[in-house]
Length: 402
Image 1 (tube, helix red, strand yellow):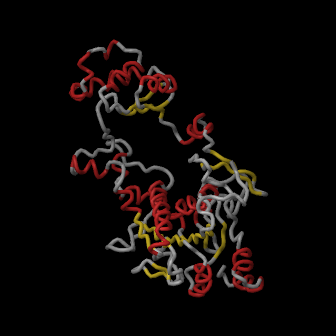
Image 2 (cartoon, rainbow, N blue to C red):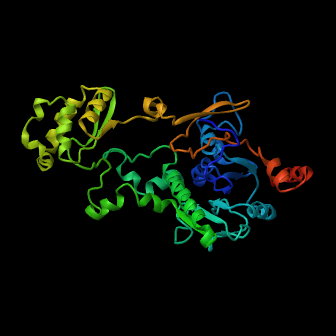
Image 3 (cartoon, helix red, strand yellow):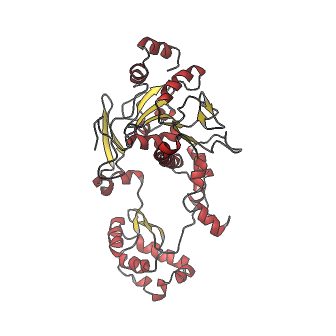
């Protein structure tokens, strides 16, 4: 599945300047996977993501993070202290050839030459597509508020249903909300590139908070339930819909059509306890909610997930095991589909990435290179491409500029 540097994707020839930190890391990773030439710019001290665990066994320093290795595969990397005024000229040189600029400016990490009112960096080309990804957008009273992935998950409404009603709310691991915003950002960039010959450059002002708040039935639930009945354990539908504990872990059932009840009974070999014909009516099951829960829990607890999955799918019931990340990593289906691919780097060994998420003919995704080391492509970019001398580069390094 790994390709050579000569492999091309649909964005071959598109140059992307990535100054977006963790907020836009997945956005630019998708663009890079589609063949764009992405140059990641990070401070001389390194992107904070380089210090995020899990870390490679036996490796220390800026290439230890497996998180960084995943988010920044396929990109080249340079260092530049973009908050210093002295960086303005170099940013202008970099911006001169960039078709797309992805930014995530903040008050803690200001970007030289960026105008928050217009969303434009003064050094970008006039026809560039500029995608600005921030926690709350460039306008409004929250425009300067900071956020972590945990805050984005909570304020976006996702935390209201994670965890038990009696206990504290629980957050999902990683930065799921930021990555969802990154997907929206990549789609917006693709649309803007398509429209660019007709309309020129565009500014995309993308708020993580708005992406999170407008998904996962949150708007629909509010329309039906207003602010009531939003307990964290609230499910959608009546038994047998829900998550059930089997012999070897949790199992998910989505029974929303009338014929799904018969399929559910077939999956369980038509148990006597559920043979009453009136139970085929979901309104009856609603009225018998608690009693049915007790019966179904007992029946499901004696079966394995694999057995139920095979029987349920054969009967036409939407159902599947619920895996932990570790279980998913070893599942036969994504492995057979080539979801996980391996890339290698001299001196660091190999890294396995969840990368091959899409199949197409011809193939649109190419894995061309592993994530860059800190400042790995400074000479390529500043000297060979921009024409500066090696001595000038060493001088900037000694000043802490690059």
